[in-house]
Length: 228
Image (cartoon, rainbow, N blue to C red; front, side):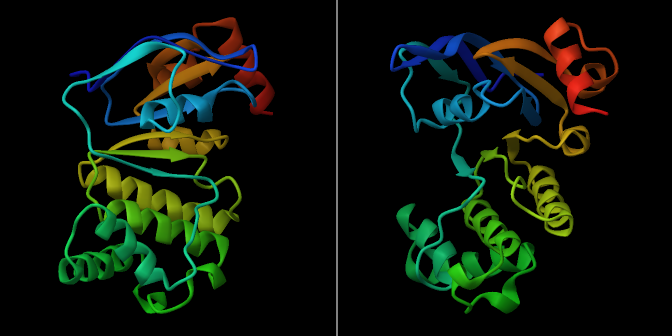
């Protein structure tokens, strides 16, 4: 498994608090899920990787540089149609109007929302908005898709649909790096688990090993608390 990202000594301190604490990590799997307790630093780590935050110390080395897109728990929808939201992302990347429109329509069809293309995006349900966000990201054909709790606010049916789309994006060749509180979802999506606690990477193991035989006391305690 070839590494596509190496993180060396990454730390982030804000207001005198160390949020990410000397993280060193090598990522090479196609589908990686970051797990950990609330406040462990999962979302912050993803934002550092995506470049939305700048570390206090440390470095990220890409092999090679990855084109990226990121989808958040509560995606931002522009005050326009679902289709125009997807087109906007493509135009920002330099696509001409005709190609952007075609790509956007195709991407909405892949997430099952072509019939809502002309609907105002902000009037869609939470699950539909998340699918628009995924279509917007997928249309860019990123090499890496970063997902921060993509189903946390959704009902079970919407969560299953979003999960299906994530698996299809992964099957298309895009790497997935995501956080989730849904351990069943982590089992279904991940090849490997990165477990973070109090800003430190505690464990990085194949998904089956993490759930069946966690190596650290912190991971064992986490699974005991999360799985009744």
